[in-house]
Image (cartoon, rainbow, N blue to C red; front, side, top):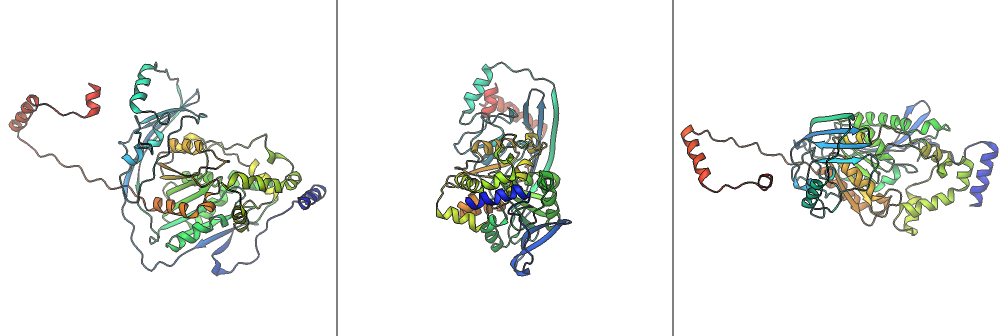
Length: 470
């Protein structure tokens, strides 16, 4: 603490940044690390592993998913999402508590996160059909409310008169989704960390999936890990970092790419999914928070001068350990040290927090995504409440939410085996191909008339929905 205070005092007197992160000078070509100059003087460290694939398996055709929904934004701050596709399969309509979603629309306030649905179960690999445009997580109102009770309550309430919509977005497309194996040469996994992290936090995931045959790419954001650290605040805005990531993506992208983001890195994944909708095959959001536009807080400790933040760095590190891990033991402290987490200069930390300005990333922006998304949340996360990820599951078109009870914000370090298993199952998952509809045999008019007369005399069997309407 005394050393940090002295260094902070010298930083204030000399106006020089403390703990400036610079890239390492050399890197052996066999260690999987590369240094990419995205701009003159702006160098990022990238770990790129291309495993040996003795047997190359051709990818399956997978299933075609119909993505149809209408998103209406009203001037009174309400968002109305109407799913226009066919009924979803049971794996999306049914929540973990067994409740089935009553309808295919959702009307919410843009800033209201209280009416969140229960987590949605992840489908098993290669099981069931999936129809986008009718996500169970995005159709429900209050959690735990029975459909019959909800319909009765809706019938009693007077129908609200809607104002003129501010804007309307219509999505009508189809996506072909297939399982991604490590033996497929057209698949690449991209890992993006958040504020204070580095590519080292993905060590367990990079080793696990590279051993399975996947091509993996992870990078250090500017000012993090072994990437260069420009001493200018504009180098750490959302758009500056997003442009870096976009250049890295273009350099290593394959035909089918899967994005895995953590915390702040989830926003960059969403940004890429909008810019490259045809190349992003699936996406994983780990403790990313709700689908809200980013705006820096005016009342934040990170608005203090850099020298003051440097003096408080031991306190900030302790606070991160307390809020980022479910337990604060020797193992967790060792994980922070080994994986180079939350080890950035005070200037970079301040610039990163004040540069989180992304007004386009609102709920409508997220609702327009048609890529399948797996949301992983650590139950003990004190940075991101579980209600925010539940809200994200409601807004997204195709989303599966999985909550790990033993994890917190750094769940990939706390529960690496569980996270790896969830991700691998999601990579292998694909919607089942529905059989073609059977053609009805052509009958003569006399025969058809006879069948009609018979059906009138016999008791008819109607579907529950039809019976209820009559």
